[in-house]
Image 1 (cartoon, one colour):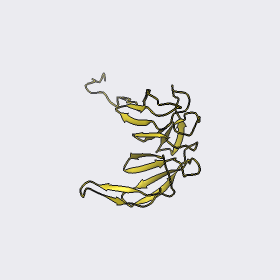
Image 2 (cartoon, one colour; image 1 turned 90 degrees about the vertical axis):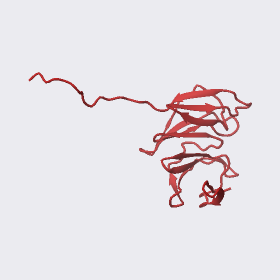
Image 3 (spheres, helix red, strand yellow; image 1 turned 90 degrees about the horizontal axis):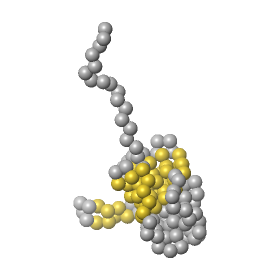
Length: 166
C-alpha cells in the first residue's frame, strides 16, 4: 500500500497523511530529527532501494539518496545523525549492513559478525549501542548482535586554575 496513517494521541484517533510516493511492503521506517525516513521495501514485483523523507509539519515526501542495494525486510534504527539499515533482502541474499550520514548524505558499509541471509530482524539504539535481534535466515534466528553506534570524545578546550609563569 502507499497509505500513510498518522496517530493523534490527543484525539486518540488515526488520520490519513500524504500517500507515499510508491506502494511498499516490508519497508524500513525510522524517525530522526523531526522527520520520518522510509527505506527500501517491496513494490509487489521487486525489491526497491529508494529512501524517502517525510516531513510531518508540511505533510510532504522528499526523495533522499537510495540504499546502495535494493532490499526489503530490513531492520532500521537511528541515532544522532545516522540511519542504520541492517540486513534485509529475499531468499539467500547475503546480509548487507549500512549507515546513512544525514550530514554528508552518503551511505557507508558496516561490517557484521553475522554472515548469510538476515531478514525481518528488529533494530534499536540503546545508549551508544545498536542492537539487532532475531529475524529469519532460512530458519528463525535467535542471535542478538551489538554494534557501538556512537562514540563520546572529550576534548579539553581550556584549563582552569593554571598559573602563568610570566
